[in-house]
Image (cartoon, rainbow, N blue to C red; front, side):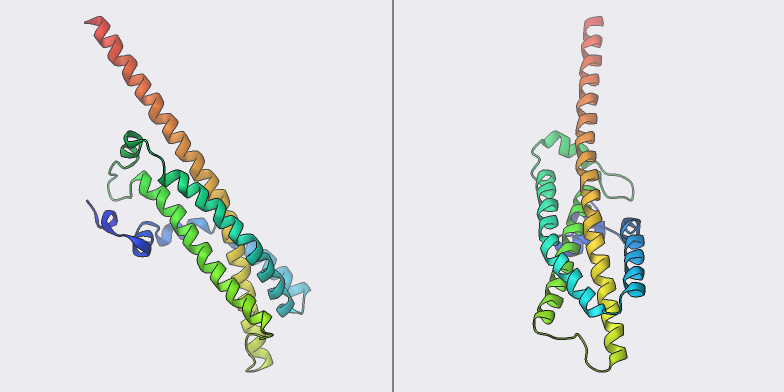
Length: 198
């Protein structure tokens, strides 16, 4: 039993979902973020209004995405076929088991979306209080607004594209179950053929 097997909670999630996994997950969200952010900066002078628009979009859409991911996660965790779960939990040298891998992707995605929703909600409340983020100087306020806008766009696209990953994971889960069933059927046929030969 490795250290990964006995870590629970957020430390457990972060020990299984590595920095390498996170970098892989940036394949689509980061380019979309950079393009949309660049278009916003070039074609709009009112970054504060853009922040308001993206925050309103985020706080209305992200809870639905969290619900979708939770439904997929419940399917994975609540699956009751003990033999299949044992198959997914086979030890792989230096790597998490297939079950741990699927589990960590769902858990990290939910954790990220929750943190992003908290951040977006915080910005939303600041906007409702007519708080222009930072008032130290116009330049500092502009830079802070740009950083806030970038984080909001990135968080939104990362959450959005995580749905694609969840669909892929649920499908992979189904495919692995199918593979296990086919493998068992083949094994049973081989045993029957062997018994008939004897």
